[in-house]
Image 1 (cartoon, rainbow, N blue to C red):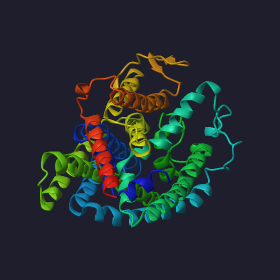
Image 2: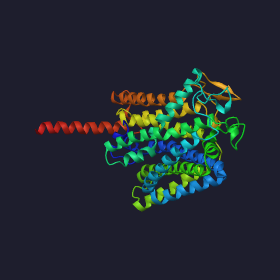
Image 3: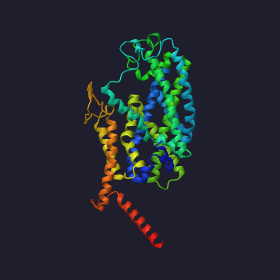
Image 4: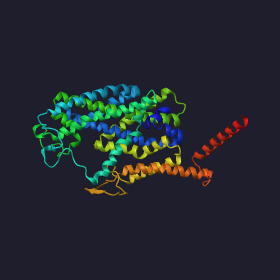
Length: 439
């Protein structure tokens, strides 16, 4: 609602266009890096999810599953571009909706499932209820991840591919509202499947005991539930829905990175006279490279949820505060943007990242050490995002006051931000003065 209207009304082509118009090409290129890395991590995340699902249901190795799915997505995105993404997304969305909701009654009626309620106990053990508990000590971590997953994707190019292709600003806003409802509806099968799998008596299935949670296979609960709690034909249909979801997300991520690089770097900086045919081939090469990079990272075997969080963190901590300022605060300038970028990145890196082997330097209240690994339970990601936002606005305003009040020499305006503004204002004042004289 807040981002769709200003983006669509100004007829931008990519999410980086407002940065390029205000800050120039160099800073836009710096913003492309976290966006590109985020897309690669997202591609690897969804490919890893598909590999795990296919290996359980179809017995295929994760390598083959990832390779085939990546190859198909790269192929039709390589050839068709945005049209292929749009048309295949419609088919894939319908297939996901139909097959996942079809699984629910079969899961609920499985002989191994005694009933789904908060009183039912996980793996027939009185110790663990599937509803779980939220400890006060973990509140900061939950709030941080909730904010990350709900706001992080607001700075995601794949979202604006749909918004900017809408016929009008009103249609773009309606599309966002419809998508919000659809996301809620599509989340229902996942919740039901998880609850059913948690209350099932796995000893009555071919999987046997110990249950998935005790074997450390809770991350594979969707394919395991489809494989052992539904008929064979339905489990195959379920894997089809997962594959559809993966390819739908992957082609959007591939086109996202390709369009940003082509429009905001190649066409605007490297080859301003590039023909349409040349730009099409640049997009195709970018699609291929990003797809191969994501596929290679998917073979690393990292946690799907960890990859998802990491891909969103880059957008949330670095790009989101920049995006908010460039759209809604006219005082934001290149000096503030650069400082905010550095502050957000530094705070996030100094907070540590176990997945990348980066130990935390800043230890926030509530941190814990388990098995030699330090876990932060403070909302440090949100803190990094807010600090970046405040830094952008504060430094921008300070630099503006400094140059306008001549507290800072004009020769120190290395980026030429205020020199251009002052020249434009002087020309406008002169134009108004001459108009008044002539009238």
